[in-house]
Length: 432
Image 1 (cartoon, one colour):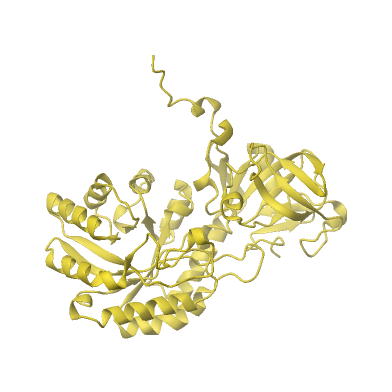
Image 2 (tube, rainbow, N blue to C red):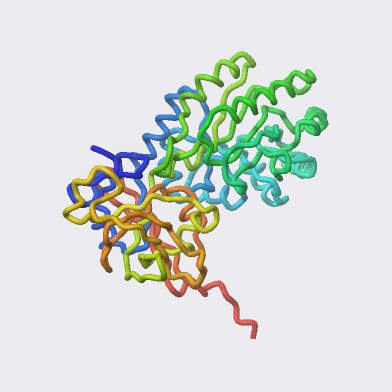
């Protein structure tokens, strides 16, 4: 079974002319549930969790980043695979609880936690708070005293490591809002050590997203080692190093991140320090496991540019408009002449801009994308859309949020209904 060209997993593949997710034809799902439609592969999620476990060992703690995709069916699937969670808001913590999952498996990160969020996390007994600064430390200490509970802390450090990724998703540069600069972190460690209701369990570093090289992770840990060696109090009781996530996908270009290569280089250094690894992958676990299905509604030509008009838009998948992200696209049913083609450059493929109905020039799913002719009514799959797809979707232009389906083997189950039109204005209040 060969992966669909451009897909990061063989669980999306062609059988003859038809594109499948595991053993389910995507065209049949589009017929049944309509489009735009997100479809996720449970087998692909299991595969990625297995890859991280094989790299870092069965005892490594994997805390899935809920912000990547918070559908409760996916959260339960990941919990069943032994994953904990990384939440960055009180809403995400409430989402875990609504899914019936144990908040004690979650770490609570995020820069500007509100008092109610901190108190919620303390009451829920989250596994640890990732502290981002002094003002948060004051709020956390007050909440711990109020609850009469000793609260574990991982101090988020900013080692000032630049990475090759989009500026919006680089989180450890010197001018980043995230983490505490090493020069200021020593004073916070001393404050934590002096607070009887707080326990310094370790340190957290997250460099950003879509990283494809291991060197930034190693450089960050080298900086943290220097910080640890600066004073005994910085090592006291410390037993965890949370290296964050950010493992990049290929998105049809280049190579995906290799967690095994990072584990081989980093684990011996962690063991030498008596530190256990904590990881927070999000995109890496679910990104390639999802596609967005959309239906062609027509085409047009403007100057030298050919447009394929589809029913999905930037409100359904924001990444191309927001980051200039490139997602490979594939026809859900290839033309007969192209069904046996071995690459994305199918017979008769032409470069088109794939655009939706939102009233913005930035509303596109792909630019200059080689696709065979897609007549009105035929479907296209946007690959690698399982992360930061639905989670960033909106009602812009009064468009409904799409439905979501989880495929497991030969069965595709609806895990989110398409939004009803009346839900678009249900929360509005008549001021009269």
